[in-house]
Image (tube, rainbow, N blue to C red; front, side, top):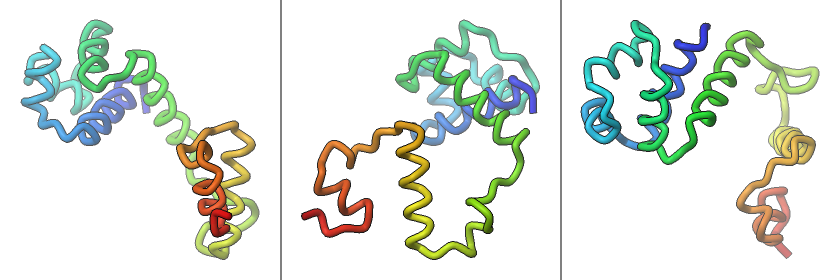
Length: 129
């Protein structure tokens, strides 16, 4: 997967998440609809100015779209992942929860629940007390 294909996937994901049709995205961004279709089909390179126009509609910075595209490339190059020594289907629900919480903690990721100790306890499998 090259950067253009990954960027097209990112734009498609953001468009879907925003609930926008291609036509509406084109109208709001100022990127012509036909150009947008060709970008999404990976038939055309995206210009930096177009990336900035689209990012503004999605409410993100242009570099965030690039970072997301880089993540698509990384996942494509990495291939399938396993959770520890076993396949995800072989882990118990408790093991899956512990694995995910460990990964979150090791990457210093903040969940909305982490701001509320009761919700954090619930997310960790406790009763929130």
